[in-house]
Length: 232
Image 1 (cartoon, rainbow, N blue to C red):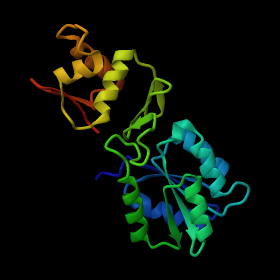
Image 2 (tube, rainbow, N blue to C red):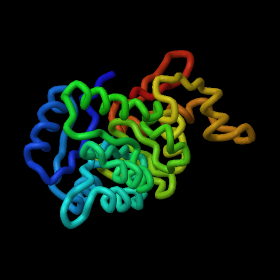
Image 3 (cartoon, rainbow, N blue to C red):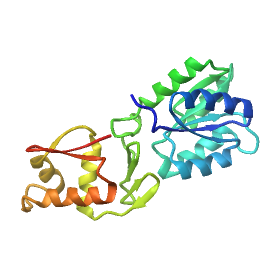
């Protein structure tokens, strides 16, 4: 599994801990952002859309629990995983962290190998689509570069919001729902246009071309004589 495009936000008020975490995670290819307090963490999370946040519990001004609750209230960050960093023996913090919407916790101090193992295990909780497995109802469908927000009917490509016509949006949503799966032309017609709608043979090709013009040529592959698939 290639982790080079996964973004992790590290939040801790101790500089030496941030340096330790950053150094070890960057060696594995992760894209790292850091914040020293909860308020800055929330701003960065909204700006960068990290896949995972490692969040210290005990911080001044806004602690990790409060920060987690505010992030969980932000619809755009619904799919982001959150793991708390807790000092050994802080059982009450672990319970409060899960109640606030945390996905896991990592006990400090942590050895580098265990840290990397924990982080990779957390990221594997994502669906093939980039969603959390525990959040099947999320209205945000994600891949490494592309977020699809059903509620707002927008596509976010590398942080940039894009508005697509309805059929283009639904076609992209279908392809991204199962990256690497080849959708036949018949499947696409049925799921996007419906059985009772008659469209021309070139309709899908035209919509695929328009998607490529907007997203670039790297995401959708033609399987000659069969259909199309999304490259994750």
